[in-house]
Image (cartoon, rainbow, N blue to C red; front, side, top):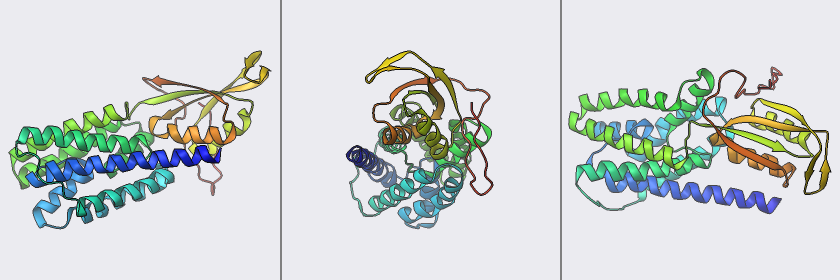
Length: 296
Protein backbone atom coordinates (compact mmCIF):
# COMPACT_ATOMS: atom_id res chain seq x y z
CA UNK A 1 0.00 0.00 0.00
CA UNK A 2 2.84 2.40 0.90
CA UNK A 3 4.64 1.57 -2.35
CA UNK A 4 1.43 2.24 -4.32
CA UNK A 5 0.97 5.60 -2.57
CA UNK A 6 4.59 6.58 -3.23
CA UNK A 7 4.25 5.59 -6.88
CA UNK A 8 1.12 7.76 -7.21
CA UNK A 9 2.91 10.79 -5.78
CA UNK A 10 5.93 10.29 -8.05
CA UNK A 11 3.65 9.84 -11.06
CA UNK A 12 1.64 12.96 -10.29
CA UNK A 13 4.60 15.25 -9.71
CA UNK A 14 6.43 13.85 -12.74
CA UNK A 15 3.44 14.65 -14.95
CA UNK A 16 3.10 18.11 -13.38
CA UNK A 17 6.80 18.70 -14.18
CA UNK A 18 6.12 17.76 -17.83
CA UNK A 19 3.18 20.17 -17.86
CA UNK A 20 5.33 22.98 -16.44
CA UNK A 21 8.03 22.47 -19.09
CA UNK A 22 5.43 22.34 -21.87
CA UNK A 23 3.72 25.53 -20.66
CA UNK A 24 7.08 27.30 -20.32
CA UNK A 25 7.91 26.40 -23.94
CA UNK A 26 4.64 28.02 -25.02
CA UNK A 27 5.57 31.21 -23.20
CA UNK A 28 9.33 31.44 -23.76
CA UNK A 29 9.55 30.07 -27.30
CA UNK A 30 6.36 31.56 -28.77
CA UNK A 31 4.48 34.24 -26.81
CA UNK A 32 7.09 36.25 -24.88
CA UNK A 33 9.66 36.83 -27.69
CA UNK A 34 6.89 38.10 -29.97
CA UNK A 35 5.00 40.30 -27.50
CA UNK A 36 1.88 38.10 -27.45
CA UNK A 37 -0.51 37.84 -24.50
CA UNK A 38 -2.44 35.03 -22.85
CA UNK A 39 -5.44 34.92 -20.55
CA UNK A 40 -5.73 34.58 -16.78
CA UNK A 41 -2.98 35.44 -14.32
CA UNK A 42 -0.37 34.71 -16.98
CA UNK A 43 -1.96 37.32 -19.21
CA UNK A 44 -1.99 39.91 -16.41
CA UNK A 45 1.70 39.25 -15.76
CA UNK A 46 2.52 39.57 -19.46
CA UNK A 47 0.56 42.83 -19.74
CA UNK A 48 2.20 44.42 -16.69
CA UNK A 49 5.62 43.20 -17.87
CA UNK A 50 5.04 44.84 -21.24
CA UNK A 51 3.96 48.15 -19.68
CA UNK A 52 6.43 48.59 -16.80
CA UNK A 53 9.08 45.94 -17.48
CA UNK A 54 9.00 43.98 -14.20
CA UNK A 55 10.28 40.38 -14.51
CA UNK A 56 7.46 38.10 -15.72
CA UNK A 57 8.41 35.28 -13.34
CA UNK A 58 8.14 37.57 -10.30
CA UNK A 59 4.80 38.92 -11.49
CA UNK A 60 3.41 35.40 -11.94
CA UNK A 61 4.11 34.61 -8.29
CA UNK A 62 2.78 37.94 -6.98
CA UNK A 63 -0.46 37.87 -8.99
CA UNK A 64 -1.07 34.21 -8.10
CA UNK A 65 -0.95 34.87 -4.33
CA UNK A 66 -4.52 36.23 -3.91
CA UNK A 67 -5.96 33.25 -5.79
CA UNK A 68 -3.86 30.76 -3.79
CA UNK A 69 -5.06 32.34 -0.54
CA UNK A 70 -8.65 32.10 -1.78
CA UNK A 71 -8.09 28.46 -2.73
CA UNK A 72 -6.55 27.63 0.67
CA UNK A 73 -9.73 28.61 2.49
CA UNK A 74 -12.30 27.47 -0.05
CA UNK A 75 -11.18 24.78 -2.46
CA UNK A 76 -8.57 22.31 -1.19
CA UNK A 77 -5.38 22.74 0.82
CA UNK A 78 -3.80 19.85 -1.06
CA UNK A 79 -4.49 21.47 -4.44
CA UNK A 80 -3.12 24.79 -3.17
CA UNK A 81 0.09 23.24 -1.82
CA UNK A 82 0.75 21.45 -5.11
CA UNK A 83 -0.11 24.62 -7.01
CA UNK A 84 2.38 26.69 -4.98
CA UNK A 85 5.13 24.21 -5.88
CA UNK A 86 4.02 24.22 -9.53
CA UNK A 87 3.79 28.01 -9.86
CA UNK A 88 7.22 28.52 -8.24
CA UNK A 89 8.74 25.92 -10.56
CA UNK A 90 6.95 27.46 -13.55
CA UNK A 91 8.21 30.94 -12.66
CA UNK A 92 11.77 29.64 -12.19
CA UNK A 93 11.84 27.95 -15.58
CA UNK A 94 10.47 31.08 -17.25
CA UNK A 95 13.19 33.15 -15.54
CA UNK A 96 16.14 30.87 -16.27
CA UNK A 97 15.00 28.95 -19.35
CA UNK A 98 16.07 29.92 -22.85
CA UNK A 99 14.38 28.14 -25.75
CA UNK A 100 15.09 30.62 -28.54
CA UNK A 101 12.56 31.96 -31.04
CA UNK A 102 10.97 29.18 -33.09
CA UNK A 103 8.91 31.32 -35.47
CA UNK A 104 7.86 34.92 -36.07
CA UNK A 105 4.70 34.05 -37.97
CA UNK A 106 1.86 35.50 -35.89
CA UNK A 107 -0.67 32.82 -36.75
CA UNK A 108 1.77 30.01 -35.87
CA UNK A 109 2.67 31.80 -32.63
CA UNK A 110 -1.00 31.97 -31.60
CA UNK A 111 -1.72 28.35 -32.49
CA UNK A 112 1.40 26.58 -31.24
CA UNK A 113 1.94 28.90 -28.29
CA UNK A 114 -1.63 28.20 -27.18
CA UNK A 115 -1.18 24.49 -27.90
CA UNK A 116 1.88 24.18 -25.63
CA UNK A 117 0.45 26.41 -22.91
CA UNK A 118 -2.94 24.66 -22.92
CA UNK A 119 -1.34 21.21 -22.87
CA UNK A 120 0.87 22.16 -19.94
CA UNK A 121 -1.98 23.69 -17.94
CA UNK A 122 -4.20 20.70 -18.68
CA UNK A 123 -1.61 18.15 -17.54
CA UNK A 124 -1.11 20.10 -14.30
CA UNK A 125 -4.86 20.33 -13.59
CA UNK A 126 -5.31 16.66 -14.36
CA UNK A 127 -2.86 15.89 -11.56
CA UNK A 128 -4.43 18.17 -8.97
CA UNK A 129 -2.50 21.39 -9.52
CA UNK A 130 -2.89 24.68 -11.40
CA UNK A 131 -0.43 26.98 -13.14
CA UNK A 132 -2.88 29.87 -13.35
CA UNK A 133 -4.76 31.27 -10.35
CA UNK A 134 -7.81 32.22 -12.42
CA UNK A 135 -8.70 28.53 -12.53
CA UNK A 136 -8.91 28.49 -8.72
CA UNK A 137 -11.31 31.44 -8.93
CA UNK A 138 -13.36 29.47 -11.46
CA UNK A 139 -13.49 26.40 -9.20
CA UNK A 140 -14.50 28.51 -6.20
CA UNK A 141 -17.33 30.36 -7.99
CA UNK A 142 -18.51 27.09 -9.50
CA UNK A 143 -18.74 25.46 -6.06
CA UNK A 144 -20.22 28.56 -4.39
CA UNK A 145 -22.73 29.77 -6.95
CA UNK A 146 -22.88 27.05 -9.60
CA UNK A 147 -21.33 29.29 -12.26
CA UNK A 148 -19.61 27.57 -15.16
CA UNK A 149 -15.82 27.54 -14.75
CA UNK A 150 -15.41 28.26 -18.44
CA UNK A 151 -17.70 31.29 -18.24
CA UNK A 152 -15.93 32.69 -15.19
CA UNK A 153 -12.54 32.49 -16.91
CA UNK A 154 -14.06 33.88 -20.15
CA UNK A 155 -15.42 36.98 -18.36
CA UNK A 156 -12.10 37.41 -16.59
CA UNK A 157 -10.30 37.39 -19.92
CA UNK A 158 -12.76 39.67 -21.73
CA UNK A 159 -11.75 42.41 -19.29
CA UNK A 160 -8.05 41.55 -19.70
CA UNK A 161 -8.11 41.56 -23.50
CA UNK A 162 -10.08 44.82 -23.54
CA UNK A 163 -7.32 46.44 -21.50
CA UNK A 164 -4.73 44.90 -23.84
CA UNK A 165 -6.47 46.47 -26.85
CA UNK A 166 -6.37 49.90 -25.20
CA UNK A 167 -2.87 49.73 -23.72
CA UNK A 168 -0.95 47.73 -26.36
CA UNK A 169 -2.80 47.39 -29.67
CA UNK A 170 -5.98 45.97 -31.14
CA UNK A 171 -3.97 43.58 -33.34
CA UNK A 172 -2.09 42.09 -30.36
CA UNK A 173 -5.39 41.79 -28.47
CA UNK A 174 -7.00 39.90 -31.37
CA UNK A 175 -4.08 37.51 -31.74
CA UNK A 176 -4.08 37.06 -27.96
CA UNK A 177 -7.77 36.11 -28.06
CA UNK A 178 -6.89 33.48 -30.66
CA UNK A 179 -4.11 32.21 -28.39
CA UNK A 180 -6.52 32.04 -25.46
CA UNK A 181 -9.11 30.11 -27.50
CA UNK A 182 -6.50 27.53 -28.52
CA UNK A 183 -5.19 27.33 -24.94
CA UNK A 184 -8.69 26.85 -23.49
CA UNK A 185 -9.67 24.16 -26.01
CA UNK A 186 -6.44 22.22 -25.58
CA UNK A 187 -6.72 22.48 -21.79
CA UNK A 188 -10.25 21.04 -21.90
CA UNK A 189 -9.13 18.29 -24.26
CA UNK A 190 -6.13 17.38 -22.08
CA UNK A 191 -8.10 17.06 -18.87
CA UNK A 192 -11.11 15.45 -20.60
CA UNK A 193 -13.62 18.04 -19.56
CA UNK A 194 -12.44 19.98 -16.53
CA UNK A 195 -15.92 21.29 -15.81
CA UNK A 196 -17.55 17.85 -15.93
CA UNK A 197 -18.58 15.95 -12.87
CA UNK A 198 -17.89 12.26 -12.41
CA UNK A 199 -20.29 9.82 -10.82
CA UNK A 200 -18.59 7.18 -8.67
CA UNK A 201 -20.08 3.94 -7.33
CA UNK A 202 -18.04 2.05 -4.73
CA UNK A 203 -18.59 -1.50 -3.49
CA UNK A 204 -16.46 -2.64 -0.54
CA UNK A 205 -16.74 -4.58 2.70
CA UNK A 206 -15.13 -1.55 4.37
CA UNK A 207 -17.93 0.70 3.18
CA UNK A 208 -18.32 2.45 6.55
CA UNK A 209 -14.65 3.54 6.68
CA UNK A 210 -14.65 4.60 3.03
CA UNK A 211 -17.88 6.56 3.47
CA UNK A 212 -16.51 8.50 6.45
CA UNK A 213 -13.14 9.11 4.78
CA UNK A 214 -14.77 10.51 1.61
CA UNK A 215 -16.96 12.88 3.61
CA UNK A 216 -14.18 14.04 5.93
CA UNK A 217 -11.28 14.29 3.46
CA UNK A 218 -13.06 15.28 0.23
CA UNK A 219 -15.99 17.14 1.76
CA UNK A 220 -18.57 15.83 -0.72
CA UNK A 221 -22.09 14.63 -0.23
CA UNK A 222 -22.94 11.02 -0.96
CA UNK A 223 -25.77 8.51 -1.05
CA UNK A 224 -25.70 4.91 0.17
CA UNK A 225 -28.09 2.11 -0.67
CA UNK A 226 -28.27 -1.47 0.48
CA UNK A 227 -26.64 -4.29 -1.45
CA UNK A 228 -27.10 -8.01 -0.91
CA UNK A 229 -26.35 -11.43 -2.36
CA UNK A 230 -23.37 -10.28 -4.37
CA UNK A 231 -20.44 -12.54 -5.20
CA UNK A 232 -16.97 -10.99 -5.12
CA UNK A 233 -13.35 -12.14 -5.12
CA UNK A 234 -13.67 -13.20 -1.47
CA UNK A 235 -16.87 -15.12 -1.97
CA UNK A 236 -20.56 -14.31 -1.32
CA UNK A 237 -21.30 -10.86 0.16
CA UNK A 238 -24.54 -9.51 1.55
CA UNK A 239 -25.94 -6.78 3.73
CA UNK A 240 -23.48 -4.05 2.83
CA UNK A 241 -23.87 -0.44 1.71
CA UNK A 242 -23.13 0.62 -1.85
CA UNK A 243 -21.69 4.15 -1.96
CA UNK A 244 -22.67 6.57 -4.70
CA UNK A 245 -21.27 10.10 -5.01
CA UNK A 246 -20.56 12.83 -7.55
CA UNK A 247 -17.28 14.73 -7.55
CA UNK A 248 -15.41 17.23 -9.69
CA UNK A 249 -12.95 15.57 -12.07
CA UNK A 250 -10.00 17.32 -10.43
CA UNK A 251 -10.63 15.35 -7.20
CA UNK A 252 -10.76 11.87 -8.73
CA UNK A 253 -7.14 10.89 -7.99
CA UNK A 254 -7.49 11.96 -4.38
CA UNK A 255 -10.59 9.77 -4.10
CA UNK A 256 -8.62 6.84 -5.53
CA UNK A 257 -5.96 7.31 -2.85
CA UNK A 258 -8.56 7.52 -0.08
CA UNK A 259 -10.19 4.27 -1.20
CA UNK A 260 -6.89 2.42 -1.79
CA UNK A 261 -5.65 3.32 1.70
CA UNK A 262 -8.69 1.53 3.15
CA UNK A 263 -9.42 -1.25 0.67
CA UNK A 264 -7.16 -1.94 -2.32
CA UNK A 265 -9.70 -4.44 -3.69
CA UNK A 266 -12.69 -2.11 -3.64
CA UNK A 267 -14.88 -2.27 -6.76
CA UNK A 268 -15.15 1.23 -8.29
CA UNK A 269 -17.29 2.31 -11.24
CA UNK A 270 -16.84 5.80 -12.74
CA UNK A 271 -19.12 7.45 -15.27
CA UNK A 272 -19.52 10.90 -16.81
CA UNK A 273 -22.30 13.14 -15.49
CA UNK A 274 -23.65 15.65 -18.01
CA UNK A 275 -25.84 17.68 -15.69
CA UNK A 276 -26.46 17.91 -11.96
CA UNK A 277 -29.26 19.72 -10.14
CA UNK A 278 -30.10 19.84 -6.44
CA UNK A 279 -28.39 18.01 -3.60
CA UNK A 280 -25.02 18.87 -2.11
CA UNK A 281 -22.08 18.43 -4.50
CA UNK A 282 -19.48 19.88 -2.21
CA UNK A 283 -19.54 21.19 1.32
CA UNK A 284 -16.40 22.32 3.06
CA UNK A 285 -16.07 21.24 6.67
CA UNK A 286 -15.65 23.82 9.39
CA UNK A 287 -14.58 21.76 12.39
CA UNK A 288 -14.73 24.75 14.72
CA UNK A 289 -18.41 25.19 14.01
CA UNK A 290 -18.97 21.42 13.89
CA UNK A 291 -20.79 21.51 10.58
CA UNK A 292 -22.01 18.26 9.10
CA UNK A 293 -22.23 16.99 5.56
CA UNK A 294 -25.53 16.07 4.00
CA UNK A 295 -26.17 13.27 1.54
CA UNK A 296 -27.02 13.89 -2.07
